[in-house]
Image (cartoon, rainbow, N blue to C red):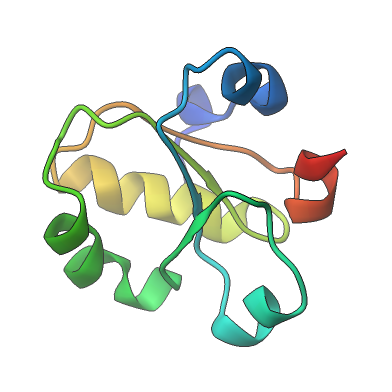
Length: 100
C-alpha cells in the first residue's frame, strides 16, 4: 500500500527550503508523547479522514507526513489524496531522524 511517487528522499531539504507548509505526525498519542518533530501537527491515522479537513481547508497545502517507519505515513497520503489534497508527501524517516 502507499504511493511511491509521494515518497520524498530529502524531506529535510524541503522543510529547510520552505517547500513544506505542514509536517504531519500520524503516530498514536502514546508514540507522540515519547517525542516528536518540532514543529509538527499531530493527528493519529485513525482520526485523519475526519479531523484533517476540518482543520486544514486549503486543498493546496503542502504536507509532509511522517510516522515511525513510513507505513502509516504512506496510508495517510492515500487518505489525504482521496480527500482532494494533492501536495501530500511522506517520508520513511522518523521524528528523531528528521530533527538531525
